[in-house]
Image (cartoon, rainbow, N blue to C red; front, side, top):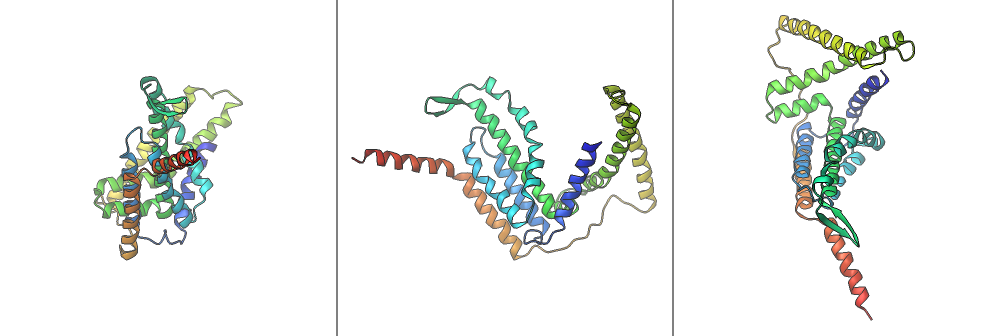
Length: 276
């Protein structure tokens, strides 16, 4: 119950963060959506062994957190929940890819470990960008921006329905969990059976509520479209915002800055070592 209610509080916290008034919050939602999409596409375009080249991309979330006045600790805690799942995806890579790809002195690192770390870094960057987008824009505004950028109306409506009724489903789940705990008397009733029964009850209850809501909306003239409030305009600030970050992403994508720095430091040490 505490986990369910805590998760919903986190969603509400994102909505509260989106209500702030900063230079990032005042930008048109389409500009922020475009920049985040470009960021995600650029990050996932790297090869599985290009780990060091992705490190400079952390500059984007850092700058956005500072300019949008977002609580860094809150973002880090939410992203940390995703890291174990990302690590689980690549944890078996070292077993299948044992070819040495990187040597640090006498210590060799196989390609499997590099690809596993690459998956974790990609997940961290992309999830952080998605969280920041909702935190500086709001979920409803993001859906409106996606619609104006060409996303099919049906998908936008589904996303809005999901966001609106997720809280209702979570409240029902929290109430059911609380009722089960009050009837459990310690550890009794804490097995998989009661949880399965509670899940089935929630599914049936959600199905019935969805039918009632659908009939009520049809009775009020719903024709498959939400009329969202459209505020702001895509002006010069938004154009500079998108163009500036696009330039940064392209520079970081085609220039391995950590590798260049490493080579420069190596040449410096070699030059000093050869001086009599």
